[in-house]
Picture 1 (cartoon, helix red, strand yellow):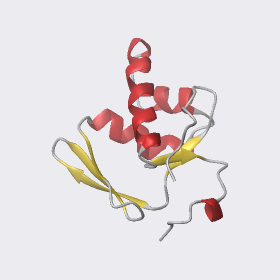
Picture 2 (cartoon, helix red, strand yellow):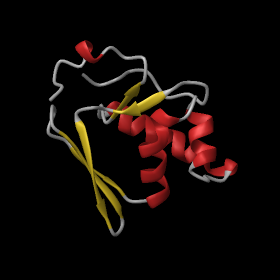
Picture 3 (tube, helix red, strand yellow):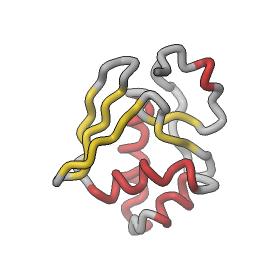
Picture 4 (cartoon, helix red, strand yellow):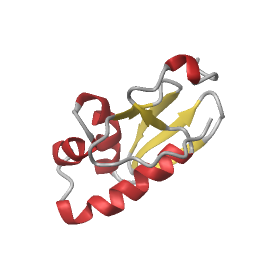
Length: 103
């Protein structure tokens, strides 16, 4: 189930439990086992951001922890929105039972 919700700086998100990241020289491959989507994360900083989402109190803190320059935050929020559309990331408070395609 894709999200219509857009990630916001004050929200807490996480990598979907149905997604595996495989490190690559360019960043990482993200594979969703439920919808079988494969996504290329072509920036190591984006990979660090996605991996650290659940460890931070909100996306703003995750961006800071991943050392994303503040002037680039809008670009990274747009990237997170694309990942949310593909169900690669989800709100942290989302009930796993709602996922339906969890492994």
